[in-house]
Structure formats: structure tokens, C-alpha cells
Length: 184
Image 1 (cartoon, rainbow, N blue to C red):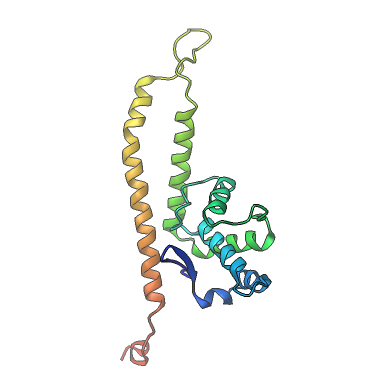
Image 2 (image 1 turned 60 degrees about the vertical axis):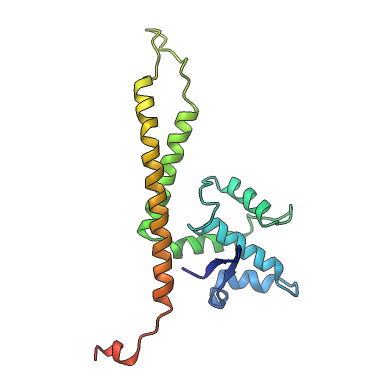
């Protein structure tokens, strides 16, 4: 789904986005003259759900929400749990999902678990019976040495996802001529 783009550091959306029911509900609900509330909420959806978002590295959705709220200057009373927003984010994710985006999300989760594991290692922890260290420093340092490769891999996956989305956007804008359609 390439209904949203970043243009001049602002989230923009194609007119077709308003044909999608969850997004149209948000647009129609906004009674401001300039539709500023709807634009901010659609921007929030983009930043929460699109793999191209600068906030996708924040895996905890509540933390991501707080960062996005600050970034796009949403009001303090902004309710990210509103059913229209949740439904729109879910729809956006579902319609945008590809094999590449699934793999990217899985890789991010693995890296998060590795990070949490490393954050919580207590090198002073000892086996009660033998009094030897529980954690093998050699295995830990070997794992840490592999982290740059993992970071490079996730960066490559992110680039591929962005390329994939750009290709889909380009091919989605092409029209087939009568002769191409019939193979003449």
C-alpha cells in the first residue's frame, strides 16, 4: 500500500487513501476547516504502521506512540487507543505486509531479544553449587562480535523493503495500453 509518502518532511497521502474506509472515517470525523486533526491522525497512522517510518525501530508500540506524539505535536489528550485509529493501523499493516516486511519485523524482534539479553546479563551471577560464573564470557563476546553483521543485515533488509515499496508504487501508476493488454 503506497497511499502515504514523505514529501518535504511531511506525511502526504494520495486522494485514493480517502477511498479506504478506515481512513475516510478519520477524515470525515474531523470538523476543522483545514482538516488539521485528520492530517495529524493520518500522519500518526503512517508513522506507526509503515516500514519506511523513522519510528519503526521502536518495537514497543506504547513507546513508539509517545515518540510520534512528540514528533508531530499531537495534543497530550490524544487517544491512540481509539477504535478508528487502531482499525486504521491494523488495516494499513495488513495491506502493506509482504514477505520482506514480515522478515524485517522478525529480524527486529530477534535483535530486540538479543539486546534485552545483553542488557540483563549479570556477570557476577554464580552457580550456587559450584560457585563458578553462570555466563561464559567467551560466548558472550563471540555473540557481541556478530552484532555488526546483524546490524548490517537488518539495514539491508530495510533498504530492500523500501525498494520493494518504491517499485510497487511505480508499477501501480502505469496504465496498460490496449495493445499491451491483448499481447498484440
